[in-house]
Image (tube, rainbow, N blue to C red; front, side, top):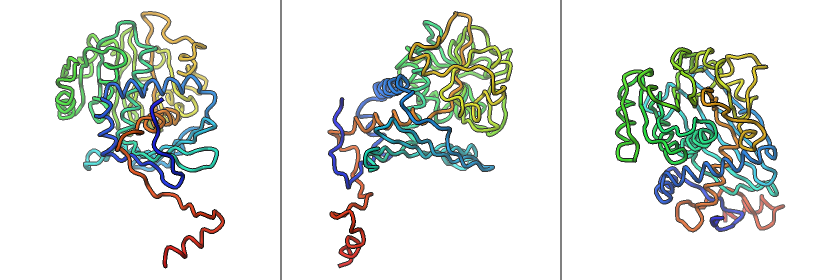
Length: 350
C-alpha cells in the first residue's frame, strides 16, 4: 500500500484544490480514475461493514446543501456538498465539496481535503466501474448528454476502465459542447459533436445523462431508447429532479447504490416504493445478477453515496505520502495535559 503522510496527532494533512490538481497530474488522470474505481469496488465488496444513511439534506428553492457520513468501524468519513443548478448562470460551480477522514478510535481527523475536483473524479470512476459490470460486451461508444463539468471526466473514465473509443456529445447549450469537445481533443477518444440528443445516441451502447435543471425533465423519452443499451443517469439529483421518462424506467433493469437515498433523489422517485431495484454491491459480490441478456436495458440510477466519497478520500490518504502535495493544518487543540485546555490558552497570551 502507498505510504501515508507522517503521523502527528496534532496536525491534519490538508489537500487543497491546487494540490489535488497537481496530484492528478502527478499520478495521471487515467491511472487515477482506475485507482479510484478499484478503491470504490473494494469498498462495495465490503458494503455490509459500513454505517449507511441517506444524505442529511437542507433543501431550499435555490438548491441543496448536504452532509454524507459513513464509517467502516475503523475510519469515519463525511463529505459536505452543495447542489445549486442556478450557479452556472452566475459564474459559480453547480457543485462544491470538501471531505474529512477521522480515526474512529480517538476521533481525531486524519485527512481534510477539497472534494469539488475529487467528486468529479470519483463520480466518473463509479460510473465506469458500474458500466464494467453492466454495459453490453464490447461497448465502445457513449452518448454524453449534458456537457457540463462532469462530461470530460465521465468520458475519460469510460475510456480508462471500459475501453471506450468514441464519445458523442450533445448539450442544449452549444457552448458547453464546444468546451467538452475542445477539452477532450487529443486524449485518445473519437469525439463527435451532435445536434440533438437523438443524434448523439446513434450507435451508442452506453448513454450517459448529466443535466442539472431542478425540475422534472425528460431528457430521454421512451421511444428514444432501444434495446441492449446501458444507461448511466447521473444528473444533479434531488427531490423533484429527474431526467428519464417513466416508460424508460419500466423497460429497464434498475441498479442503485442505496435504495433509501435513491428513492428520494433518483429517477426511481417516479416509481412506487415497491418497484424492484438491485443494489450494485450485490452485483459486485456476485449475489445478484447484472446484465442477463444482450437485449436487456440496464439503468444505473446514480445519485452518489457516502461510501464512494469514503473510498476516494482513502485513495487520497494513501497516495499523498512521499509528496509535497498536502500541507499540515494546525486544526486540533491538543495540549500536553489534555485536562488543561485553559492553561494552554493562557500560555499563548504570554
